Length: 299
Image 1 (cartoon, rainbow, N blue to C red):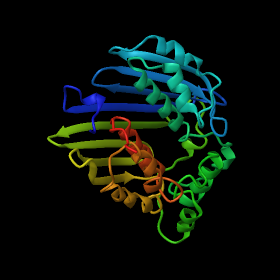
Image 2 (cartoon, rainbow, N blue to C red; image 1 turned 45 degrees about the vertical axis):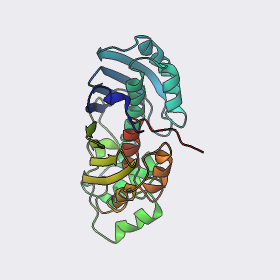
Image 3 (cartoon, helix red, strand yellow; image 1 turned 60 degrees about the vertical axis):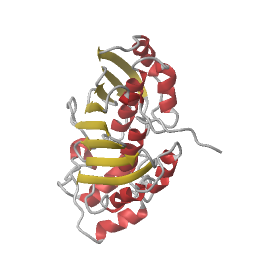
């Protein structure tokens, strides 16, 4: 049976996330993420180096409201020296432990790592003369400024690059995301909201993300009796490269008819992500699945 620990004694659950980036150091940024839900509110702030290091210099956690184990706050201080690459989620989980509020802090840490992929530090001459909407030059700056972007999704594949010369492509990217002014605050601001709504024998999953360069409103509908996804749709009001990023968005319909089971997240890597897909669409979908408990698979 498909269930959710967040829908015990209620038919609706909502979680809000706000994250932002400040240019506080000569060679590092401060990423701050606040997470709140119906039960508690927390905040995690970390000073991190940009690509390619992605290293946490220092981290500070706070419980803003509701019950949470205060030991988590001390534990996350030990993130110093950790790189936000493969294995980072496990490191977060190990430091937080299986205690009240741990899940929100782990999610906040993951969001910090994602923020680190949105702002970089290139020499000022690299962005000199960058005109608003210059998609080709921004694409080149992206693949220079973030070591892990090439071939991470359709947009940064050779197929995506080829579209730059064949159709109109627009971008909201700005010089401040590549070479931010010293001391600049809130260079990049992201707001996310996830929601579960139980309506009779249907479970609706919503996830929105809006920031400087993205605008996603995602929805899935699960039939609890058949255990399958019966509806999937997404509205993208803003994309880093309108005309290229638009291509993989249609993949969301591949989720219709998929069994909602423990292996769905793995199948989604092929259905939504990878070099032919959209990393943001995959992340938003995968994060929703974290809120659900699936029945164990039978052999």
